[in-house]
Image 1 (cartoon, rainbow, N blue to C red):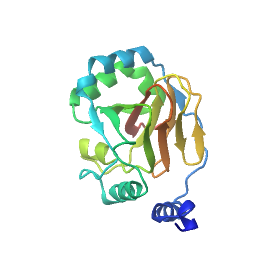
Image 2 (cartoon, rainbow, N blue to C red; image 1 turned 30 degrees about the vertical axis):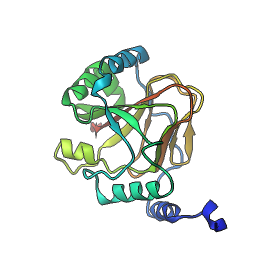
Image 3 (tube, one colour; image 1 turned 90 degrees about the vertical axis):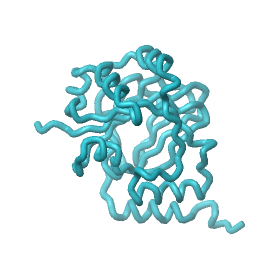
Image 4 (cartoon, helix red, strand yellow; image 1 turned 135 degrees about the vertical axis):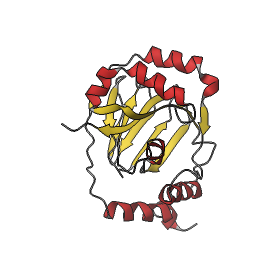
Length: 214
């Protein structure tokens, strides 16, 4: 064992190179607070539990080379199907996205400042012991769905009341002790990760869409 193991590897080099080529803020203030009722989302998941896709952090042919490079490096340092599995609604069943748009309501889209006609929403459930490794997004799913090369905006909406062991990190900003509906924007190419080292599921909406011109 080389002592370098504890501080450096191919992934840390990859991240350092990324940071050298971006100008991201290390501060991610609360963007807005949406009006959400956690019980409504919990009931929807209960009713549609069998329709969830189960995703793990592994090579995905629908993603760009850069995204799969991140996945490969994460797998090499210990992220596997055992610790990255999440339940995901809204990716493969089109009607889920329509349900989510209806549940959120236009008032919430107005708060976000995005067009509800060109939005992709995913409902994510991280069970205890599940983690999303450090990465940055390229928005392939949104661009494929709407046949566009535009760069949309991404928001993370925290649905469940915060519980011990749960966190969201955007760049160097650690987020916890949230209230349901607290919403953070994840800037394009910003490093972020999420995890549930706690004792109840962590429920998040990932909302991707185009901001309206003001």
